[in-house]
Length: 117
Image (cartoon, rainbow, N blue to C red; front, side):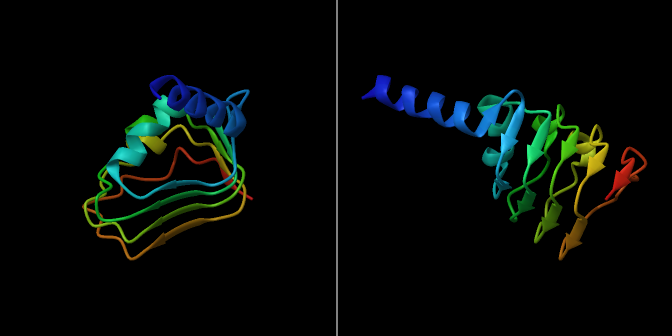
């Protein structure tokens, strides 16, 4: 059973992340989801939306390798989120940046972001 589980996880990773690109939306609803990004693929690009929502998400440091989002970056309904550090290498967001119903301690800046198309 353990072998087949590993094969399924490996096949899922290959299907969704090919050539350092995540295909589809990546949804983070908990801190465990955020931490799993590095283990699942550590991609530099997402062809879809990056959605961060939920009271349990504190930071997204494991997304440090991410450079492009070919969709939207949505951060919503977070209470404990104070971790923009993991997003600081993002240079391009194709659709839009949405911040909704969050309680941020602070937002340093988005000067790392070159463009939103």
